[in-house]
Length: 304
Image (tube, rainbow, N blue to C red; front, side):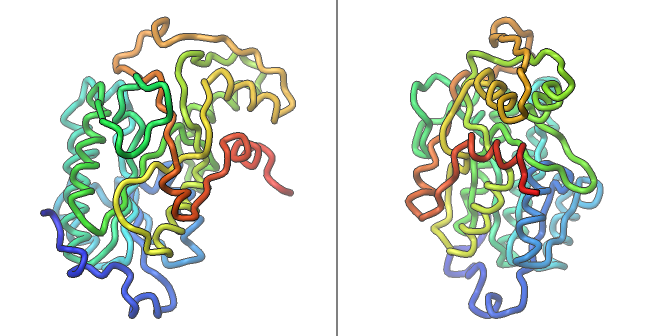
């Protein structure tokens, strides 16, 4: 066991809940999801955001000091080695960040009595399904990145105070320091510039708005919902061609979409063809995720 039992780790105790604000430690602060989490939790607590330069989760001593000094109520782990193809060439780096780094966070969070929220990926599945994956489905990662993220899940789920949220195909507003745009961000940029948009016709995903992930994360914590594994994605699924067409429609542009297949592109790491995720477990708690179409509309047509 990497951290104490649920009874030993009360999480957000009554005393802490009575305090003015929660203390939140956020890793991977330059990422797209971290930007949304920082915005969401700024009204709920004091967010201490660390990028890799400020807190490298592969450094055990640095992790222990940061969490021991801050003693956060919640640790939100967005630190991840997300370069799927580069992971094939640098497996030791992917495993150090996505696997062993999570173990260090789990241990330090357990010692401080903090809850941990760790974000994983749809890549833990092989993509051979013909229906949305549920949390109980058998995992079968293909490639180093996928295997390293699954290792991180195993370590996080060893702690009874941890949430593991599988997310995928993220889009959203970057933070003030800038962050990666993600695949959909690249598609939108191309549409706006009137450039051809290459999009997979044979890869099916559940595209997810980082704003909605952040809101669901906060709701899980505030509800003190049962810890464990959840699929945290917008409702529904589509191919990347369908997503690109919807983005063009919302932007009022006729997108020039160039359909491609996984077999037609030379990729170092394999991608799951079908990786739609079911969010019914979240919905059973009353956390109903909007459809991906509604989320994309809110992202591309924000209220003025």
